[in-house]
Amino acid sequence: MNVLLNELHAYHHEVAGKINRVKALLQKLRHESAGSDDCKLLFKMLEALHGEAERHHHENEELIRRALLTTEAPIHPRVEDIERDHQAFGRIAGQLMMLEDSTKETSVIAAAIDDFITKYYDHMEAEENIFFPMADKWLSGIQWQEIKRQWH
Image (cartoon, rainbow, N blue to C red):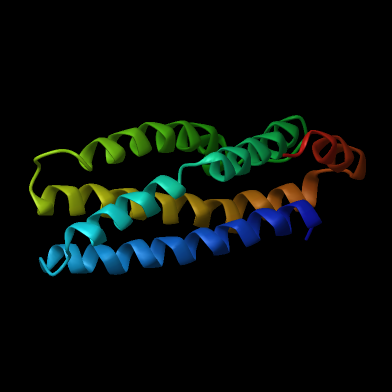
């Protein structure tokens, strides 16, 4: 697989580790054994999932996606959805961060975070099983060079 795709895959692996830590804190929150420090840490970890590294990661994926759309590849609907997913994650991040200071019940907060995690995993799965292999197959060396030139 192309080295840039491997970099994206490695980032997904890192994010999956962060999400597992979020899930562990979420379990404590659900069972009301989480203290205020745990809650602060939970939201700090969620914030880290939407920082500059995440933005650059999505921008890099978009470089590849746009290049792929210029090929003769039969574009899978999930590849078309990737851009909308990236935009949605930005909105979801804002909504999740507002929950930190809200008076919402723990179950409401946990459900919102669970929904985000489910959507994020679905998104990563589509990228790794559909988008990345398709890009690896259809993009030319020249296209990869141009993508690398613009890479964050």
